[in-house]
Length: 114
Image (cartoon, rainbow, N blue to C red; front, side):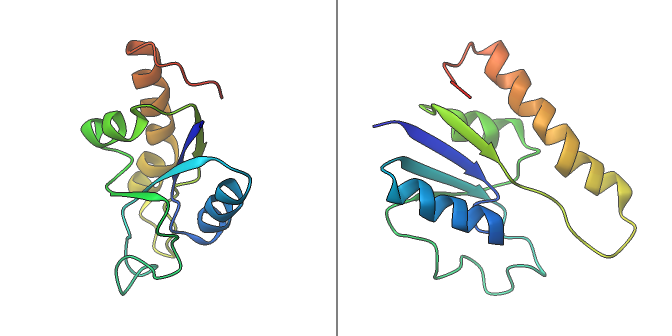
């Protein structure tokens, strides 16, 4: 069975993506930091038990390396959202994390298909 990583998989778009991927037969791993104020009560009850869950930050190399182990496909949906002008956090979560995923995939020659 092919395995998919969904970063931001506890968010609105991510959780619906997880549900669909499971429905069509993928093995799913979620990486999410459950950041407040979005997730005030921790891990949401709507996350399916059959999806593996990793609590972590997409900006942390060790976390991304662990999350990418054995993965065939990546849906990188993690994003920082806030109404405050925290531009550096926005940039790091939304841009630098994408570069980090590519960097690790290339450096480790990971067999990620897409």
